[in-house]
Image 1: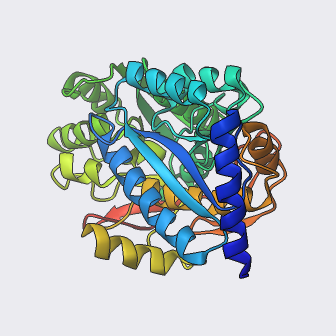
Image 2: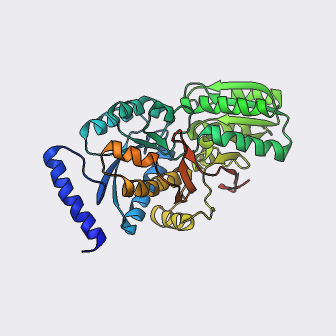
Length: 371
């Protein structure tokens, strides 16, 4: 009997036993994995790409034939209570060995402790705020942290444009954007850049002219924007309307085509730090981009790529896990050897954070290109 046929037969028997005993089946054969994304709502531009990337990754893995993945994707609609409810459902049901998601770091801080208490592994694919993986020994992420990305992009901009002064605008009511501020301020202080003014806003704001008028008056060489896509697009548009000539710089939150769309093209020249570039020659990336375009009729973004990489990571993890019991899956994640992904050669560090190269990009003609 063919190796895969034997594996699938073994899985079928194990699944039958699992149904009768309430235990989780062995890791051979198929695995149903929960995914909680914000496919709609304000974070939809991130979650929609995550859903698409994960589905494409599922097809890629299943075509290879080593294991079979079935992602059960749920839309939390950018509602923290819905994220919490979904995490409670999946950790109590005993039907999945792992949860992928959620989309936002603030949601992770609300929901991941539920998984931690239940011993359920979590693989975040867009949670970049400080402290996410510190919530528990089985919380992982394949998304580079703001602490890894922001200092790199700031240093590149400082060198390229001989920056001496800066301003910061950030959301003071969100875990991700507050991390952006903390990391950017520390990096600017370390580079001896004078921060002339710091302005804040609240999630959901659409008018930033008051804050940006104060920034314009200080005349900084550079403005660091700590924002998610919805607010970032309006910030960039308002900066353009006010005639601000400072270089605009951001972290992972600005890595969405929605920023360009909301700004009406005013994001031309914005510089961002990233974990992935559409033109990267990493293993399988050109094929990933081509297949994504064919299937979804648009370009993938970093969040789609990180979702696709999650499928590649889980293929290797589930092949080595002793079983689909959450503890065994967590152990396999901890002992995972470096994996070739569309993000590049990927591994987890001792804190279960992502280890892969940082990319610095700029917006040119509506696309992210190398800075």
